[in-house]
Length: 174
Ligand code: HEC
Image 1 (cartoon, helix red, strand yellow):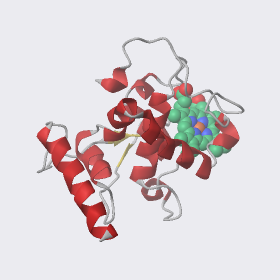
Image 2 (cartoon, helix red, strand yellow):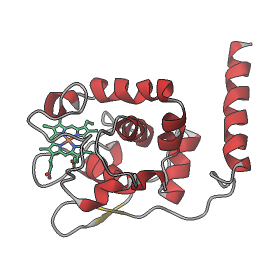
Image 3 (tube, helix red, strand yellow):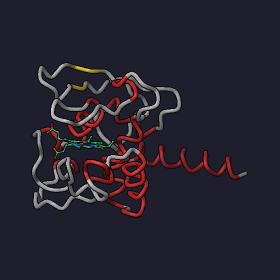
Image 4 (cartoon, protein in one colour):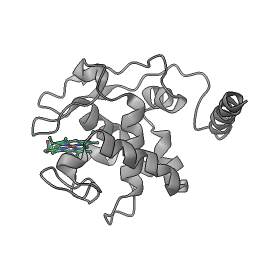
């Protein structure tokens, strides 16, 4: 009974997104990623069995559904904050991502301009940088113990909700 209800909810959510035109049911495109490291080499993240609908949506559209979802319902963003702690991002960026040995991820000072889009932020988290940010995605790091696409997207959603800068544009919402 419980399991059935959970499936029902997910299906409802997906069809709501599809109805709102946010999530096309038939996805054919592919989001193309570029490393933030010198040379900006392309890298590939493939949809995998067990990926959530949100992860699959992102990999075809470059749009992270969690960002708008969490902005509308900040309570849900807590799942992103939990992942941020679970994956020890806190070690370098501080408990609330306000900066420690690594930079703040909540202010207006972006190390690379593309981080104002969720795709750009995914590129540095998944693929790492030349200046101390490790690569976290299991497919990019070649290690199944590392993060899934969904984990990274949830963290990005939480970081966007927690944004403390002054840019009224909030490009990640468009
Ligand atoms: C070992 C320390 C370390 C850990 C652990 C770490 N980071 Fe970083 N991170 C850095 C450093 C250093 C930079 C700046 C990189 C640069 O300038 O190239 C950075 C940059 C970033 C940026 C870009 C910030 C900006 O203002 O442009 C994001 C986003 C980010 N990290 C997210 C994460 C997430 C999410 C995790 C956990 C999965 C994580 N980091 C774990 C060290 C770390």
